Length: 473
Image 1 (cartoon, rainbow, N blue to C red):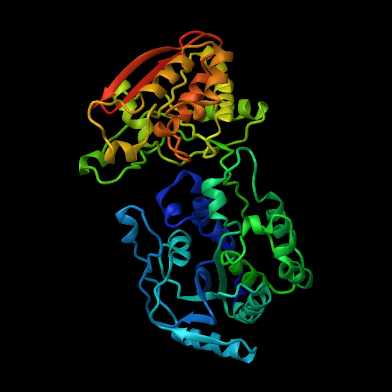
Image 2 (cartoon, one colour):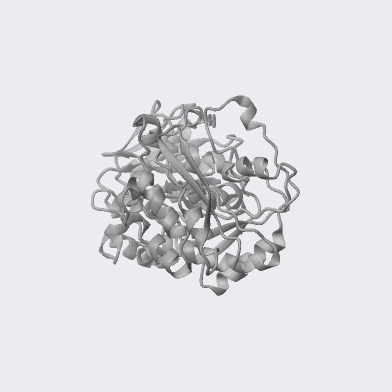
């Protein structure tokens, strides 16, 4: 007996970032790599029909080649991200059958044997099924972004599920990139209300589900999540909802990408994560085999929870170069357990200071709190705008010294307003202050007394780096 294959919507993330181990995508990467297979029996399904948000056409367009090359429809990523391979076969006969079924339902479509599979296909599929042994049919969304037409497409595709053919939708349940990059609000999930609307709609039976989704753009927060004329990333979800059949759907993935959750390494051991590019081969062979401490990681999580700070444990992510580069020099013996902790992608100074204040309690147990970042991190200025004889961040560096060598209340007050200081955004550009956040965490962990500047170094006469320590409570 042939299984009824599922209809499944997945978020594919930003460009190739789920494949790069980018910190904001770790939850999504884990879901695609480890969780999807719990809901889809890859050994039994006969093919995957995949509706991608990154292919918009005036009529439904269906990939119909025996093979399709990859279409790298993203820009500005490392060279290796343009060398991915995903050599799953196509299925020309299935493509023709889909076209015939759509025609019977009065839906115009065309076959395309040449267009490559875009990153809405190959990025999630490289994680879901790296074996690439299941035929794939890529299907476009409609450029009119009409919800009823997309729901109807899904209802046509539903029949193929009875043959063991899975229907996948690849998009994003939230896709306001302007808000994501330029307007991130610390501590607020900007699409929380709309996300709950989608959950309510998709976990309803067919008639209610359709009624709700056809009016999606009238819901609170809808156009903040998917701006007018830019809702292409929602359309695959609506197609999948149409393919879902009479019963309710199930939410199998819910992940906060708002940058308000601390992540704590919790493995017994962690491999190294070489998160840099273009360096000599020997720089990718370093070893740093210090142990982790799962019990301490859990205690840190508990302490953060008591302070109202969300966190999660991660037993797998490797130690990045912010850990192993300094530690290879500080303690090459690698005999002291390490817990790696993330910064928040919202880059909110108060939240980071508060994290430090929670971590402070562990110092009394002989546990050191290190922050690894850069007191100056404008790499564009460093590489392209170097002015001989001028330290570009001199004024901001002195602000940091003044703040960090003050007592706790003054220190916190100053650091919470760091971005209003002269030279602040030249030192740490807008949306790129992640290298300052560890210093703010450490300042929070410093206790009541002032810190001490123990490092002050001019790098090629271009910028100045400072390091600080708090020895006493």
